[in-house]
Length: 341
Ligand code: NDP
Image (cartoon, rainbow, N blue to C red; front, side, top):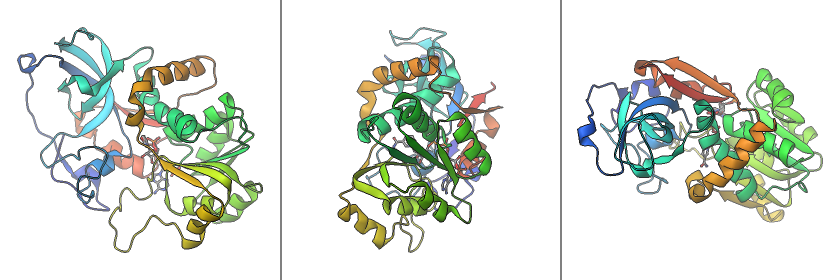
């Protein structure tokens, strides 16, 4: 799947790509590269930013996808031919792949060899790491924190944040926010939340205030917008905000008159309560991935983490639909395409 051209706001992303046929061959391999068959493709909200035409020139954290270039994704692929000494034929590798059935993967795009369930690797590999480093390194969460609020808590990242907060750190009040009553029920049943609130409920604001009487030590933000605005009004002195994502604005980056939805009143709270706000990109922690993976795998084996996956089994023709599914909130857990080739 090739991007037709970088897109604007509010478009049907499924129409942004062309499916073309191009052959790859092991003869094209350079030193360090592998020829691989795509097995799992991860669907991640950030991909919407990679194809947006209004990225501020040179200020995205990675090179945007250009017109006529193949769409990229995090995923798992099976090595078919190799000129990389670390990976042999038949290995499953966790890597940046393309929305293609087969492809050549350069060494800088191979992260590690898959172990255990390869679909779990997609969940642990990107969103698990994001939850881990966002919560523990950027947010510096500890058992001393008494209240943590997580937005898009039923997302794959959010659900892992909630479980680490409750099941690993033992934080007293873990409050998750999600977009349906069913997702809220899942959060309290399976993801360690003490309270889960539906941000689409007409009484959400009152419920949010009632749930945070002693204010918030740590707000783990996946959405931006109004939910973040509310959270900023409830931060403790020297509370911390981890800016992990802003999915509520990815599809309307340059909407006329648009802003992230933060009111002046709540922005002033950042000063009054000396709130620390810090963003991050998971790849800044790449050198520490093996340690994090080890911890996450151990917690999973110990039953402290349940990995929630939503796997679509399809052939290459349906792959772009995954991206629109995410933005409609229709996924339950990590959305992954298992490619039938
Ligand atoms: P998922 O794809 O698993 O889930 C995304 C969820 O976001 C949807 O199911 C939906 O749930 C919610 N959502 C969609 N649209 C909106 C909206 N307009 N307002 C509020 N919520 C919305 O998410 P991930 O776990 O992959 O990603 C979660 C966040 O983490 C994203 O913001 C992503 O960009 C960020 N991220 C950041 C990384 C980093 O390095 N900083 C790395 C990876 C992810 P609901 O039904 O509850 O609305």
